[in-house]
Length: 508
Image (cartoon, rainbow, N blue to C red; front, side, top):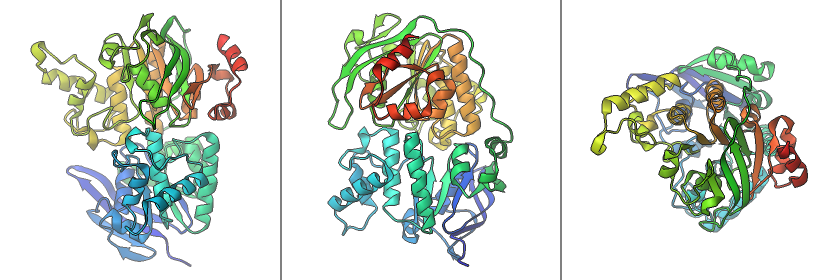
């Protein structure tokens, strides 16, 4: 029999006083799709970085195809046949998609051939990409597609995927799964990290569970239920979402015939967007990444103040020309999809990051009350169970899920009147996702108008009262979530909606 593709024995990694991986053992066979499951901060990303050579372990041994190896860099990992798609992407914003992929290849390969390879691989996997686009104009979902295609172009023996399906429609997820199964059938091993427990049960052959940096369980996920996997991961069933209470009130945020040309040649133009969000309701917008979500949220949040003043109104007041700070003073808050760089400054502490949108600790003449600021940050860290070393921890030191909890907590703690949220639980474990969703529902029940833009259909079906779908810069009429189906929303993601029928649903 062939030796295991990858073996880890007694792998340990420490960061100062924190033990991220503690005596971890992991075995992946050729052609096996192996899930690594754990809540945010459990040590999954650290372990993957060790396998990929981005970090060196403090102790332990790695064996590749039966031979002990020391992987000292991603370059050495790629030379062995290991490819990885990180949750936090490693792309240069000023370069194009093709140029980013070209960087890791032999210099003899031409940029034109790289672009052709990207188009072919993207078409094979159903991942729409334009090689000539600069990365800085791409949404988070589109950047993830770049990472996936770049990894697949290497024809790896081991492919590490971290939350790979958050950019895809339900139909495209099934196509990707078919492709991954075919890839595994050729002998390629796959390490699969996802917080979607139904995906792990459907796709993976084996599962290793991490909690607090230690391996706490191994199982065949096909023999488990979603509830049993959740208990293995977080030690309990995820909390149930509270039932719907109350009814929607007056219109808080109104958009009428919002039409905006592209701000550059790679952006998406908005065409005739109209929607209402009432006090005490959550309205969801579904869609495949890159169909105008970024542009719409920029126009609503004030990052893009090019709209006609009356095209966007807040409690009857035209705000289309107002900037983000002015809109925030009127009660409109925004949680962007990109955590590092937009939601938080990576090199600043959690306390200092509060000052991006919160002013309670500011005193006369711009003085900052540091004690009050730290107390405010500590309160958010405690309420939202953010795993960190405290208010002084820099944002980039947190796992993606914990930073997301902190940013969500920062905005919810402000008690907004209107809240715009992009991808609220992207890359967040099942327990933290349930907590964030419950907080959004509680905010809605307190009378806030909430607009959620998400590519997680499960999330939208769980928390929203009405749904729209955005496709190619156009917005469908809304439909009550209770009347929508996954298949219907999947079709609408291609722009195929029946306006009269949907409009009738909105009227109800």
